[in-house]
Image (cartoon, rainbow over all chains, first blue to last red; front, side, top):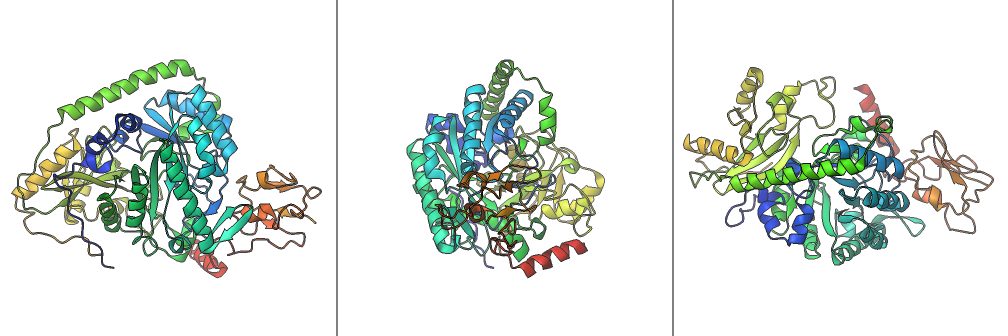
Length: 487
Length: 92
C-alpha cells in the first residue's frame, strides 16, 4: 500500500512538547483550559511524565458492540481497553480511589472507562462520581464513552466534578461505521448495519456539541483500522475540531486471534508504526494530536505505561485505613512540588539547536520512566518513547511497548528471545538512548543498525536527542535525503 | 413460557435493569431469570429485552432451549471461522 509521505513540519518547527498537547499549544489555550489539563497525564504530554491516573471498573454493561472488543475477556496479563480483573461496586470504587490517592499522591485523575460503556451504567457511574466529588474533591474525574447515551447524560455529567470527557469516534460515515459496529441497542431494540451506525454517529456528534456548549473539555479517541477507516480519519479529525473537541487521539487497532474479537479472528491487521505516524501527522495540520496514549485497561492504576493495580485489589484495600483529610494535605504539598519542578525545568530548559540544516530526519528511541529525563536501563525498559529529530527540532512521535501482550515469556510467540523482540520493536529507529546498556544488547543493536547510547543518563530527553542528532549529522551520516514510509 | 440465562453469561448487568417483569436477578456464578416472573416481554415490548442487549451469543435460551442469539449472529464471526482460529491457538 502506498502511504502518504510525511507532511512538512509546521513553520517554526515543532518541539516534542508542542506536538503532544502541552507547552506551545497549551499556551494558545485559555487560562481556564490550561489549568484543567496541566496536571492531567492523559491530556498533557508534559504532565504524563509526572502525574498518574487510575480507572475504576464499575461499568460492565455496554449498549453497542465494536468489532475490536470481546465482552468475554478478562486476563491479568493483558493491557488494553475493555479488559479488567475485578468488577467494583460504586462503594468499592470510592474506597479503592481513596486508597490509591493516599498511597500514590501524584495520582490526579480518576476515570471511568468500562469495561463496558460508563453511560450505559448510569446509576453505577454517577453514584461513583457523586460520592468522589464530595469525599475526594481534589481528584479530577473523567469518563470515556462510545457516545450512544451521551446526549441524555450531559446534564448529569455537568453536575459533578467532571471537566473531561472522551468520546470514541471512529467514523462520521454510516457506511464506514457498519464495518466497525455490528449492532447497537437503541430504544429497546437491537439495531444492525448502517442504520445502527447512523444513529450512533448522530448521538456522538450531538453529545460532542452539547459538552462543548457546557464548557466541558472533550477529547476524541479514534481507532485506526487499516482498510476500514484509515482514509476517513483525517475527515473525522477536521469535523471534531470544528465542533470544539480540544484533542484528538488516534490509536492503533489491537487485534489478535487469541482475543476472540471479530477483527482478531478474521485476520484484520493493525496499522504499522509508520502508518499510525503518517495519519497522526496528516491530522496534526488541523488538530491538536495526542501521541502518548498507552491504551490502558479499564482498571489501570499508576503512571501511564505502568499498572500498579495488583497493590490495590479488593482484599488489600479492605485492610487499609485511609485518613483522607491528612492524605489530601500531603497530596497538595506533593502536587505543588511537582508543579514547581515542571515550571523550573521549563524555565531552565536550554534548547539545543540543529547544527546542520539539510540533514534528513531521524527516529530515536528513549528509555524513560518519567520526569522527562533518560533514566531507564535498556534491559529494564518496558516501553520506549520515540522521538524524531530533524533540522526543525525534536518532536515526540509515539511510544512502543516492548512486550505487547505477554510478560517477557519466551514460551509465548514464535520462540525468539525477549531481546530480539525488543530490537524488532525499535524498527525504524537509528539510535536508542538509555541510562545504561549491557554488552550483549549493545552488539545486537549495532548489528541491527541501531546505535546504542548510554551517555546522556539523567539528561533532558529533547536536549539529549538533539545532541545525538548533531553528532550523527557532523559525522556525515545524515546527508542523503531518505524517502520515508513506503511500506 | 420463560427465557433462561446459562453459564456463558459474563455478568455484565446489561439485561437486569431492562426486564419489565423484574425477573432477572444477580446470582453466582451468573445472572438468572425467575421463570415464574418472565413473560418473554409479551405485552411490554416487541422483542425480549434481555436477549436484545445481551452481547454473548448463546447465553439466553428460550423455553425449548434454543439460543435467541445463535453463534455468529452478534459478532458477525462465522462459527466455522471461530472454530478454525480456536483450533489453531490450541495447537500452539
